[in-house]
Amino acid sequence: MTTTKPASRPANPRFSSGPCAKIPTFSLDLLSDAPLGRSHRAGIGKAKLKAAIEGTREILGIPADYRIGIVPASDTGAFEMAMWTMLGERPAEMVAWESFGAGWVTDAVKQLKIDARVHEAPYGEIVDMAALDYDRDVCFTWNGTTSGVRMPNGDAIPADRKGLTMCDATSAAFAQDMPWDKLDVTTFSWQKVLGGEAAHGMLVLSPRAVARLESYTPAWPLPKIFRLTSKGKLNEGIFVGETINTPSMLAVEDYLVALDWARSVGGLKGLMARADANAAAIWDFCETRPWIANLAVDPATRSNTSVCLKFTDDRIKDGAAFAKAVAKRLEAEGVALDIGAYRDAPAGLRIWCGGTVETADVRAVLPWLEWAFEAEIAAQAQAA
Image 1 (cartoon, one colour):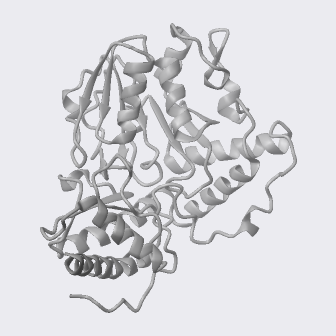
Image 2 (image 1 turned 180 degrees about the vertical axis):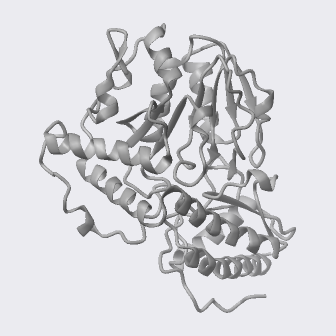
Image 3 (image 1 turned 90 degrees about the horizontal axis):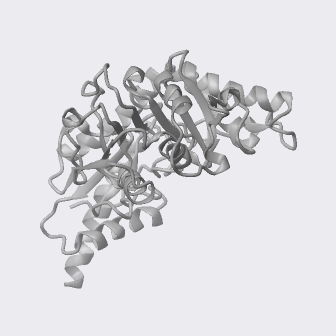
């Protein structure tokens, strides 16, 4: 039993799954070029916003004929915008294996009330994507931020589909290889894998998605911040940096700095390698401990960003209380902040492993995790 506190500590204890750790080189001084107090519609503001869009395209390898827009309200706003403007033209397949996917199901079925079939899998598992009807519109998350389960690839999505694929990729973009030819609508936010600031969403549209927008008018009214077309045509300005509402130019500058850092570590391949190394450190740790396991049932679907863990020791009486107590001990020691499981997820822990996290910090926190587990087991026995 490990009763002595480990000697080493993570240099950065921030393992939150959103907002996530800033880039390792972050300093407020890096934001000094932000055009504060200037209009986002001035030349400098438009240039910064366009640079954010084109930098996203460059690093993620998004095809030249796909549109990329900066929209309000983070990934949530981007995905809501997509659903409210494009769903309803045909029946839909709503897919959920964690809480955010479940939220999209609720919106489609209870708010928009479209003709939809719902496919769900419990936390730790994934829906059989090959069993879906892709002549319908299909809405799904690529990486389950709250379940630690991700799509292993896009092989199940047919090239000759008639419906649109609408993908919430907020904890996957910049850490996982996205098959753009299989994705018609993709959304994500800055505060996940690149550790950017919150409140801004990214909306990526394939030519098929643009065609839907220009040929279909939903039966319901659309608020201003959801409107992507004007007089039946795509509002092209949104996709060159002319945002629907006022963005934070400080947050834009922060994103540009993060994109520069991403280039410095090898772009997408470098970011993926960093996340893979971080996640592997935790997986290897779990393989050698009988009291903790990955929530993801199938190793092929394990997330390399939001690694979700469950305690498996028979001595634990109340799983939720135990997990909260372990997380509290780690936070009190200042070695791991904000790693409790998401409120709707099974009891356990969630350690963010995206590319802005250093592998040395992941390795340093693991002995502390073992210490906190054993300390809580001992406390539970003493209280019994």
